[in-house]
Length: 342
Ligand SMILES: Cc1cc2nc3c(=O)[nH]c(=O)nc-3n(C[C@H](O)[C@H](O)[C@H](O)COP(=O)(O)OP(=O)(O)OC[C@H]3O[C@@H](n4cnc5c(N)ncnc54)[C@H](O)[C@@H]3O)c2cc1C
Image (cartoon, rainbow, N blue to C red):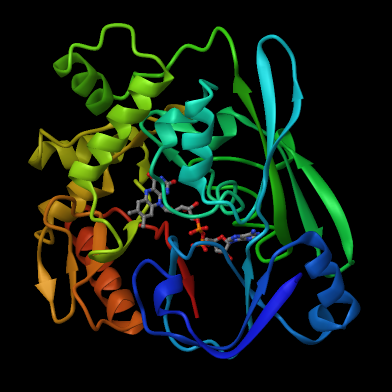
């Protein structure tokens, strides 16, 4: 079976915000040959599908008239290895955390800090996923994708992906242009130095008396910290951080710090600084606040949650109200990290 089709598909369990959206058609593709067959049948000439992974970084505003193409290509294989490095090629539909656990079990270093990020491997390069001091681009080797306009396969190496903070060329110039089918990562078999630079991670390891953490120690620590801080989408619908942390000129940070000397800032590229969006949202009074069926998570103001029965429009409007009040209070423009699907 290369693909399946469901007419009038309910996507409630296919998006982590738990929004009860109906797609005119859901096509689940299990292999590259499934994509090629669809192409031969003229699908991509007639339709403009929405590409779906695990649905953990999307806000579906309303029912979708266009078909949804869910990428469920699986498989984890060793593509190449030497004494020090190993190249792992993974199907786009594999669960990201499953890949991290697979690597940690084998003591391959590089992605242990990215444990428990929901979603699929194929979506990981789209926003260059990152957490606890590590970003995907640090281990990314290449990806394969299917160019459905020209019916060809294409490979992108790291330098061609335009990676940035929660950003890549696939979110900008090449948005909705390619279907990612396989991702290859370069992990460390030997001489891996775990990255424990992130404050919360270092503090956790110190508290647990872990002196020289290995890949497994870092993985366990990240899993424990994340479980204590972030809501489980199975229990409380959410899409993780709703906004990106704004990167601003130092002068803006200085202006804010006149009224709020405690405003945090982290160094960013080009002499700019990154201010935690969660801090701005909390100061604007939104932390833990509930409006109708929608709210902001009580332990982390950056996470918008569905308390049950919310619609995509309600979530979107809530996010826009937060954005507006942060703009009014601090003169800083928040940009959604979540992909808003019209
Ligand atoms: C509780 C929680 C915590 C999170 N924590 C983090 C975190 O720490 N760091 C972080 O970076 N992110 C985090 N996220 C966001 C999210 O997990 C990631 O962005 C993840 O990579 C999204 O994967 P997905 O498969 O769910 O993508 P989806 O939500 O299905 O899709 C996201 C975008 O990618 C496109 N897409 C998906 N698959 C493909 C494909 N195969 N080919 C082409 N386009 C595709 C979609 O069209 C869409 O535009 C979190 C989310 C949640 C719910």
